[in-house]
Length: 246
Image 1: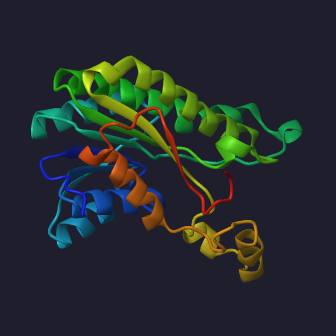
Image 2: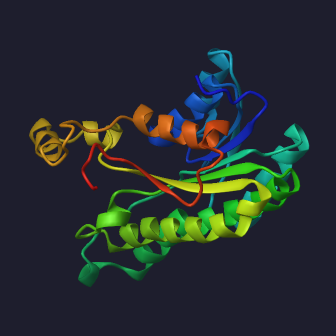
């Protein structure tokens, strides 16, 4: 099993779905996890980690508030002395055809999914460079690679994460910091489980492996990229989509 002992990780959007599973799996492999989400929504994740014998703390964070992001990182550094892993997972969707999309829906999606990743990465990059090592991993989407009707804002934000990560990877590679992207396909979450079984079957028919992915599938990819075993991988997009997009 990948060993992340003595590592400190920040995971945004850690209250549910992929973010929660990433936080749980990082902690299970030994990392101390700062689970961040709006309000007190990450408390359940931190409690679950603690109950399993792991190390975690919940943090209230609106990722679109740059001052709050800076304060969270400063506090984590004061408590732990280092930050080794940043997982940019927080994200929203405001789907609509472009001709009907409100400007606020565009702005909110870009701010939460893309600009927040910039703010979080900027906040951790100096301490990572100083310690000459770190992992920045952003959760994109297959939609950022293929596009999808009615999701121009979401697709733009997720495609932007890929370009952002590749550029940053080139900036910091010489300092031992890697920057990568995980791009999930159709994943079983609370939202997809609530959709009719027939629709899920239609989705699965588009996937060569014949099933939707799980949050654990995505979290395992994140843990690999966060580990020492991935030290020679940077600027890459690891697609976790069952072959849906090749």
